[in-house]
Amino acid sequence: MQAWSDPVATWQHAAGLKIPAGVDVDLMFVEGRLLLERVKADLDRSDRRGHEILDGAIEAAADEKRPVGARLAALQAPELDAVLLANPLRELVTVEGPYPATPTARAAVRQLVRVLPRSEGATRDAVTGKVTSGNFRTAAKRLDAVASMGFDVIYLPPIHPIARSTARAPTHTLTPGPDDTGSPWAIGSKDGGHDAIHPDLGTFEDFDAFVAHARGLGLEVALDLALQAAPDHPWVTSHPEWFTTRADGTIAYAENPPKKYQDIYPVNFDNDPTGICREVLRVVRMWMSHGVRIFRVDNPHTKPVAFWEWLLKEIRRTDPDVLFLAEAFTRPAMMQGLGAIGFQQSYTYFTWRNAKWELEEYLRELATETDHLMRPNFFVNTRHPARLPAVRRAWRVQDPGGRGGDRIAQLGRVRRLRALRARGGQARERGVPRLGEVPDPDPGLGRRGARGPHPGAVPHPPQRDPARAPRAAVLRNVHIHHSDDENILVFSKRAAGPAGGEDDVVIVVVNLDPHATRETMVHLDLPALGLAWDDSFVVHDEITREDWSWGQHNYVRLDPSYEPAHILTVRSPR
Image (cartoon, rainbow, N blue to C red; front, side, top):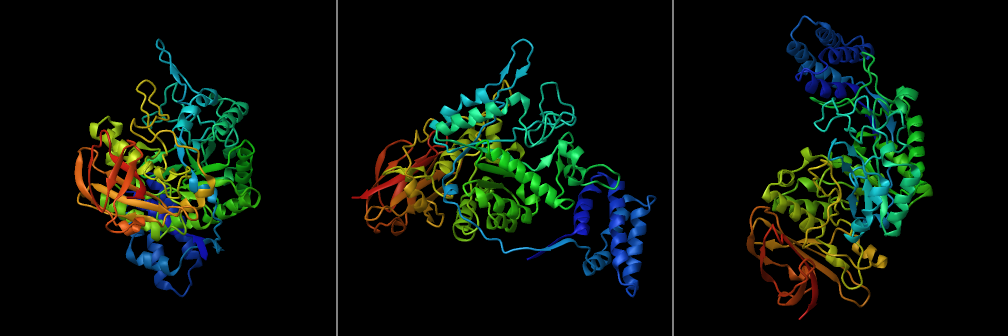
């Protein structure tokens, strides 16, 4: 596979967003003119028409007396696009691939919960209002409760020093108060970078104790790997070539025009790929030496695929048990490509699928079209409230329906297949929705931590049987069933039991309406469950602990405020 960097297309995309928004207008025209001059320098002298078109565009880019709209229109003219397409400016041309994938069975049974050490144990002085941050020692006291919920992994957002010179307030302005620490993703200060711990959280000794306590409870600690730097990061001084220097001499910060993120400098892998690769490998191995065996990678799709292929291959060569989770919400081809080159788990678009037809369609896609490339992780939340769908944002503002939406997400989507642990305790499945960040609004501190499950949620899971995990770690056995209500989703999963034993079968019925109780008939495809059409059988509700007699057609009533879902283990047919 051949790939290259396209600086002209990159500029065209940025200019189309920034210039109309009035962002860096003069600088964008300077950068556009410099690119067009490079194209002209390589253009065949015999192409007189091409030279005329480029000369006109260069003149427009440099003419500050013309209206901005006219200058931009000249640089977006169809005849100029034709010249640029016929004479592409290509950088960093490479030939890569194929990308072999190495499946890891251990990745199939991970359930993650996000915990912010700064929030766990944080206090506010009643008189002065000053907030004292939680730390690894106080957060460790929360681990027993988290383990009792049935999670496998504690996921920590970046725990590194945070920039102060460009720290953001909770309102995302650049005027933080004395107690505002800034974004954890703005990594780097005088206290260090990716290989350091924020002083408020403790020392490496405290971190090691946190990891050891988690392991004693059967939990692993996953760490965020965010390859970006704040202006205060040591890399900015020691390796300025690792970043993008603009035409005016400034370092480019992250942008999503018209939004600006002055506290984050994206890493430019084009300037010194070897040096950057070695440094990232050093950082990853350093955290591995402190017991981290799972990395949640922030925005991997904004870094070169070849880099990830190299890094994951290097880690697998010595430590094949280390897992990488791709936090990517981008084009399907890129998401699948990350899975193909070695990421053992991936985020999905699940969070934004709300309607019954959307969920059914997406489940079928993951089960039949991309299951050979992606091991999907069905997080019920994102780390940014603005990215939540309406049903989840409603919970943020304490809307009564929103609370139902939160429970639907937790019970109907996250715990829907936990019942497969029946008869001996089966490990979590590949493709089973896992709880990511569980919001816990604290009006006193305005921060989030781990919240306990809904009162009707599945209680402590029994001891798991690792021998059954390979049979459970598939996604192709998802089967969609029918209901008469467009707000009731019904599906099942069936995993082969031990030799000579019965299959493990679970049926999930979810009310997708967070505002209203729904009553309907559910119609099951019994052969898909390994049963005959006229069989009757006992189902055990893993939430209420009740047993019912079911058959092909069954009545259900689901109240989102109390019981938004049935998670039913199928017992032996009668």
